[in-house]
Length: 381
Image 1 (tube, rainbow, N blue to C red):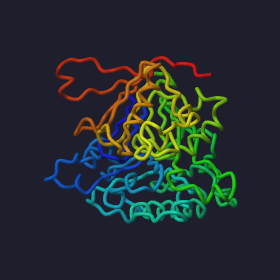
Image 2 (image 1 turned 90 degrees about the vertical axis):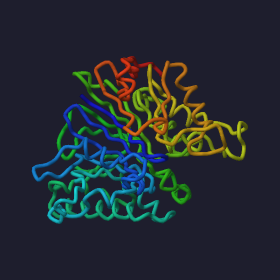
Image 3 (image 1 turned 60 degrees about the vertical axis):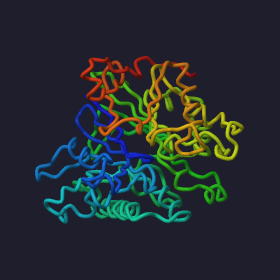
Image 4 (image 1 turned 45 degrees about the vertical axis):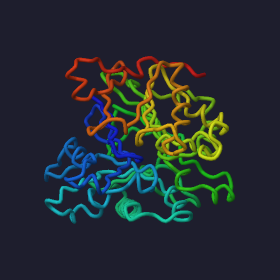
């Protein structure tokens, strides 16, 4: 059975997708220092993750693939401490570190980040390892075991033109994990988009270079049992461009049963106006809302954030939550905040009829039925 788990990491992202074949994809990580402290009440998400993951022949925990949406600290925190980076032969036995069999990484994100932002140590470590793996591919002509990488999006000046089989271009789909074709999913690469000109390139930040992907996840012989849309911290400028590029095929390319609300339910993904400054006078971008509004019948929108309160905070933002609730109103959908429960992950089982929220232990004991999402598509043509 396919599954999606949203770990409770505060204002940050850490999502595990388990495909029907058993292969695993981790999207971002945010393992805070408090989560490693046994005397702290913060959920030990590293242990939760390792308890789920399989072990290889040497007893090492592994993910088949890991996607870093962009190099903000709240999307890669804990990478050095909990994941093995470097040559497989240098793995420290008994460390318990997680092997990343294949990295999914965008070169555009890091080029823009280095221009406009200082990267944290974990982000620099990811970037160094990504470059090492690309060089290994160039040296030997293939991705060696536990050193594979998939490059998401082309870089400028032909820098990625020689990457052939490990390059996915914008608008292309792929269905391979760790070098293997996997018929239990397909993914569409929607962003990061290339800048229109030099001026726009200078304005784009690492948030506006976040990887956006739409996954079709199979279950029980249904190839399209659940559509999952995730987009890191992509802001309003990107979602407007995504809409311009995809509005002719919006229900296919952007339609979702599960949406991970971008930037932890930030208003800045839906509007150019500041929520704290303008309040209810802040105007929503219609194009961005359309891009994020392609909810299918029974869809769920998940805010990977702390509890959302009615104040001027952003993220998470109460006004963004209201917009998402309005989007869901017409499709009988559900809005869920990861910060509203715990300590176990917010979890969904993907079944032929859609995605079922896995109830918490107390709810399961009470015999209450889980909610069904994504059972019937709604046309947005």
